[in-house]
Structures are given as C-alpha cells and as structure tokens.
Length: 254
Ligand SMILES: [Zn+2]
Image (cartoon, rainbow, N blue to C red; front, side, top):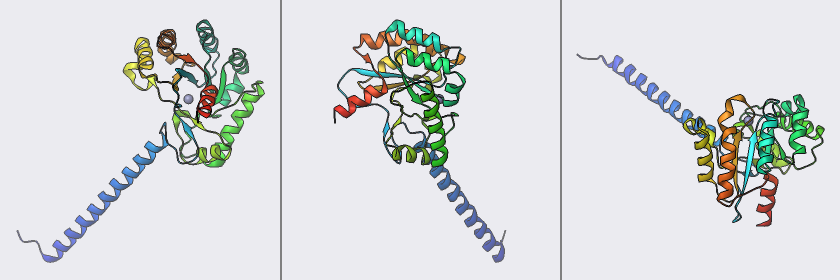
C-alpha cells in the first residue's frame, strides 16, 4: 500500500517525537537512580565527612543501635550488654528521647554513647539545610536534657542524605556516621539469629561499624543474635568500643 507523502512526513515526525521522549525518560530515570544511589550511600556524600568504618590495625569494632529508646526493649538490651561487658553506641530519635527520658538516662547511666538519629526519623534526602538544622538541633537538645555530656555524633535514618544535611553537618564540623556491616538488610539473614551473628562475625574488620536495630518487637531475631555475635567477635580477637573511641583511633593514626 502506498502511503501519501504528507502522511509519511507526519509519521516520521511522530516517530522522532517518540524517540526523543523515550530518550528523555531514560536519561531522567538514570539520573534519578544515580541521585537515589548517592543519597543512600554508606561511604560517599557531597559535603563533609562520612564514616562507614575507620582504618586501623587494631581489632576494635563498634556495635551501634538505631532508633528508640522504647520502654519495651531498652532495659532488656542494656542487661544483655552488661552481662557481656560490651559498651555500644545508641543513635536515638529525638522525639523518643523526649518521650522516654527514663530509658534515655538508663542508657547513659550504663556507660553507653548516645548519637543523634534526627528528631522525627525523617528521610533527609530532600531536606533543606534549615530543616536538617532543626532536626539535628532539637535532638541535641533532647539528648542534653537527659544530662548526657559526651560527644554526640549524627546518623541520618536509612543513611539518607543529599545536600541539606551534609551541608549543615560540614558547617558544624560534624561527620555523618554510617556503617560497613548491616546484617538486617537481607531478609534471609535478618530472619535467623544464627545467620545474623555469623554474618557480622564474617564481615568484621578492624574499625568496623555494625548497624543493628533492637528497639522494636519486630527485631526479636537481632536481640537473640547479640550473645552469639558478641562471643564470636571476642573469640576472633575483637574489642568493643564506641563510635567516639573509634574516631579518636582514626585521628591518632593520621
Ligand atoms: Zn532509624
């Protein structure tokens, strides 16, 4: 069948528009995917310092617990750490610190380090500098109100940040603390205490930071994994230190 010339021109025009549109969609998707990957990176950000672990030859490791404190699980976790003689770092949510000051003070009284995990556990990817400053400052105030006098390091929820938060932290000479070991990120590991412990023991390197959640009912397997994880790391020669102690080691080694 013969296609009239006018029709042919229109068809090729539409084909061009379609191709250009497709190319634009692919380019925008790739760019968004790149930004998304960047926003959740554990070891790269656009401004300031990000610390997923520190370089050291000493067999030291930091156990870090995100979220809470919650009345249901704080004491149980503190008892477990005391039995094992482990000092850890708790990245607490500012609003939970205000809601549960007793639990917050119990963590401090047990000698653990407190970190800042934002006030509302917000995804900080699109946060403006002002919003980030507000989330971080309110949490600092909540933590200080409990009487805590130690250094307060910052960990954004889900390790998400892009411009506002890193800018705010860089201006205040504070690092973003992430992690290099995250056993709960794989459902087949997270569902089995023995696998969680084995994963951490296998991945541990001198200066590693382990990301764990123990403050919610859904994290029973992580709580159950702690004794074997701690025993296994000790058997491999590891000593448990806080994030501040880890950072001091990094500074001393520079
Ligand atoms: Zn969190």
